[in-house]
Image 1 (spheres, rainbow, N blue to C red):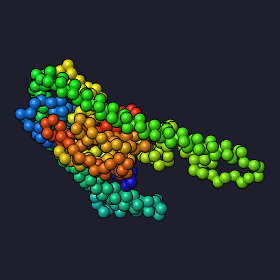
Image 2 (cartoon, helix red, strand yellow):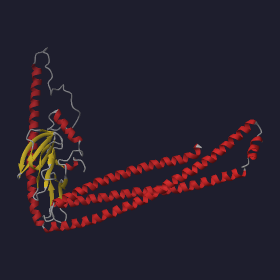
Image 3 (cartoon, rainbow, N blue to C red):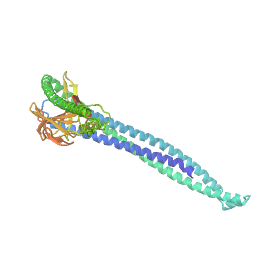
Image 4 (tube, rainbow, N blue to C red):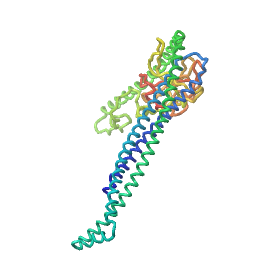
Length: 437
């Protein structure tokens, strides 16, 4: 019995396992697609906040480009789902073929046993088969054989019934797979149409930008000047903190040397002074690249915490969409380029701006009429610029997620802030530290 059912049970087990894997993969693809679609909807809403009669701006182009990239991601996600469905269709077709062959074999075997049973159907033949045994043990064996034969026929019927049920399930699943593929392909075609519409939208917008290239050049020149002023202000804050930390380290080192000298000049037999914080007897911290700014264990702890949260820090505003990325990039359709020492984030006007990590406020300052807050996180610094109001002051201890001010507006009156990250004096890409959205 076990030999008969083992192949069937193995196939059922493999089928259930494959179905679970496919379901899990499909759920993950659908979850990812919903997330990307949500991001596209946010971009669409952000675009709607920018009225059509406004002049074409680089931020709007960046929104359109971001939407295009995410639309491509949705289509690729659908392609992955179609491939997954195709794999399932192939597996079901193959299993249907195998089950049909197995069912034909089982039916043939059962027909043979029925034929044999018909030919030997009389009770006299069965009794004669038993009584013609050469010995009692032989008779027992023949009785056992007849029971086994009867059981074998029952198992054949059960195998045929279960194989038919499994075949029916596979055929139904194949039908569902085909319907699902048809529906998914319809969604794919819809997304491709939307992609073509957005490409045309982008082409028209690029032409509008190109038409006002001279005006854009002036705007970019003004922005680069603002960025230089902001960069200089942040750099001054960082230099000041590095110098302060260096001075503290020098004073601590001088105090240690004086303490060592006093200990060396004491008469023999004098009891050694109790060890003080910072003395040589203090346990050393694990080996790590030395940073001037990490002058105390607490500051080092914050630095390490900031590092360990790379790509996992919260965004400084809840509703956030990057309209200008970090670094230097050409502006499509023009001979111009844009630069950014951080990232420009579109948000709601007056939105709460929050610290992305615990730290100490090192400066609250003004650049070109807009407020900025710089917070130190060990050897790292974050700066939040274009605030309409601030709720912290220099020296304030802040926690992750604590509100430090309100978002200001750009020239078009839309909510916007700039977010900057420094590793000591080096400006780094903030999106490399924030959670993916």
